[in-house]
Length: 117
Image 1: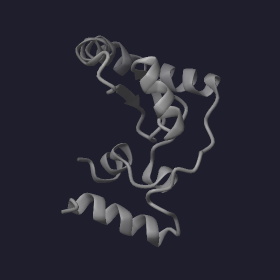
Image 2: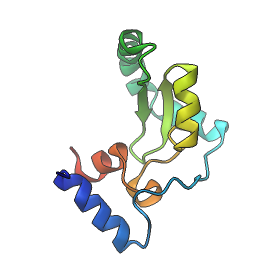
Image 3: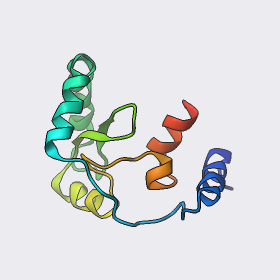
Image 4: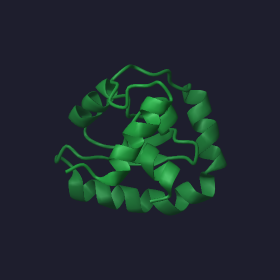
């Protein structure tokens, strides 16, 4: 059974003329722009980074990661193993990538940004 949020995302993507499951490589923002966005989120980053570090220590070696995305969907920080990062590069899910549904198709970050869930 497909969760309603996923099905609704597929419908929105099709309505925008995009493949919701696309693995197409998307353009990235520059390291400079990532740093600018991190600076804009400096206070929030100072609060969440210790928690992200702690969570990463618990999941290290598991193939999972902890990401920080800004309110526009850009991945700004990713805590993960090297092997996991290599997989993320293939799926366009690493620092500099935009995960908004309208850009990247159906994905958890994009759905969360759009629905607030």
